[in-house]
Length: 112
Image 1 (cartoon, helix red, strand yellow):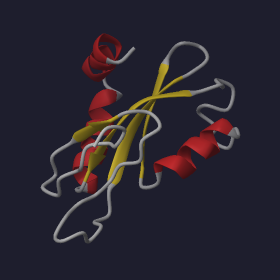
Image 2: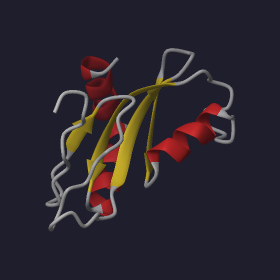
Image 3: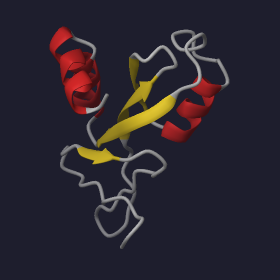
């Protein structure tokens, strides 16, 4: 349906979301599996910030209120994209990659 974000599969496949959309989960007859979200923010200084969370809305609010030391002096922040994972270790690995040199180049080329 228009305006809805695409479903997330439960096999560890990453799906990209758009700002303003919640990551829906449709697995095993509607049972919600726990999702891990890697997100990219664009900071006021023009640089990206990459993080990982289980609750994107709450984490964005913490960033915007200045409760996250890494971004407290880089506000306002804009959500660029998020990617959901059913496997937390794959999410952590992807976040680590995005924070590497080639991962930062990937973000700059595809998202910024």
